[in-house]
Image (cartoon, rainbow, N blue to C red; front, side, top):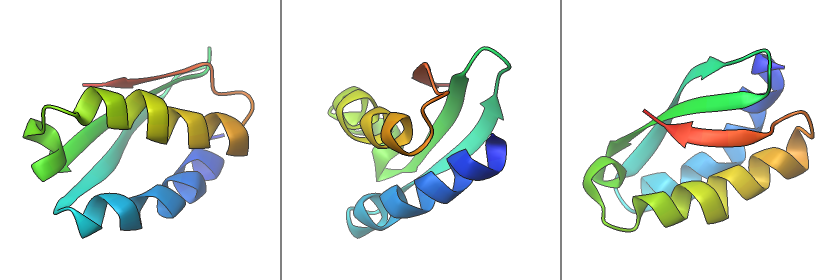
Length: 73
């Protein structure tokens, strides 16, 4: 599942990089929780929680149905 999550993140990265940020995949747990680290300007942006839930999580769940939740660490 980790490889599929990484491929889905490749679709998200250009959006984040356009604003000076990026995302790093830290862990995918057996129960479907994806742990990410927002980097660059995304790491300190006040809208990062919305980006994480409304953007990244939505896309990951579409691409990898086993994903239950996405959390930032």
